[in-house]
Length: 127
Image (cartoon, one colour):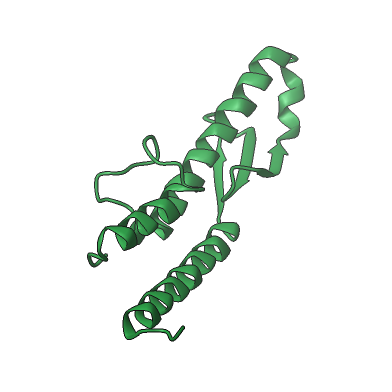
C-alpha cells in the first residue's frame, strides 16, 4: 500500500502537533510561580504541574504560636502560587485552546491536546 499525498499531509500535521505538544510540555515544566502571604511571612513557589517547589517561612512566624493560622496562611499562599502557575501554563497552551477558556474551565494537562486532535479530525481549521 502506498502513501497518498493526503496521508503524508496528515502525517506531517500530526508530527507537527506532537512537536508542538512536546514544546508546550517542556515550557510548562519550566514554569515557576511565587506568591507571598499578605503579611510577607510565607512565600511559596509552585511549578507548572501544581507541585510545591519551594516554601519559605520567615522566622517571625514563631512570635505568634498559632499553628492553625500558619497552616491557613501556607495553604492560601500555595493556592495563590498554583493559580499563577496555571495562568502561565494556560498562556503557553493558548494556541490549542478556544479564546474563552480560563484556568477554571480548562484541564491544562489534557485539554490542549484533545482540542487540537478534535480540530484535526474535524477538518483542520487553522489555529
